[in-house]
Length: 189
Image (cartoon, rainbow, N blue to C red; front, side, top):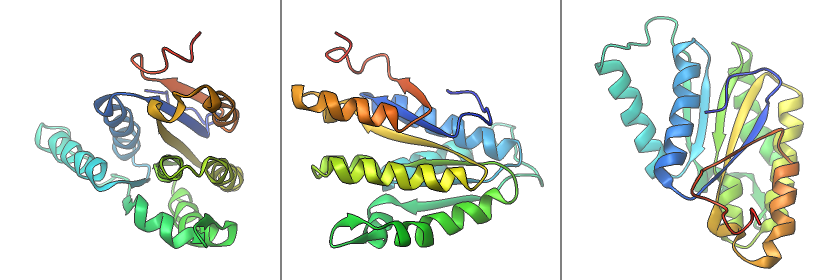
């Protein structure tokens, strides 16, 4: 897990193992909730379900969140992506309305922890330039509010020689990088 640090606003998680990703996201969100900070997770249904199970497990196993627990907002990544797109491409105005406003509201109560899978979905569709554009929308939002964001990219998106430039662009769009130890053997060379 990347430590909670105010200077780390936007971290990328490069992963191969879905379990590794879930562990990183769950820790990020649970740390926020335990400390009374809010969280927003924009993910596919499977990850959202795993997060809810992890939260329930934490509560049942004697680590209740108590009255100071932070607020948690969960959004389906596909549905949210559809809301922020115009003609299939992310739109800055819609992003700020659909995602930016809730993140700003949450972060008014303490640094919000966020996780998003919309960029990964764009890449799965072959929309690499749109993913970088969406990363910039996030950077603009994070510059104007108190939130820290994790983004997830599966290593299968970077297996071709042509993807090396995109890999560098993704790394450059973030101020922290965390890689699953099982991912990116081909890119390490």
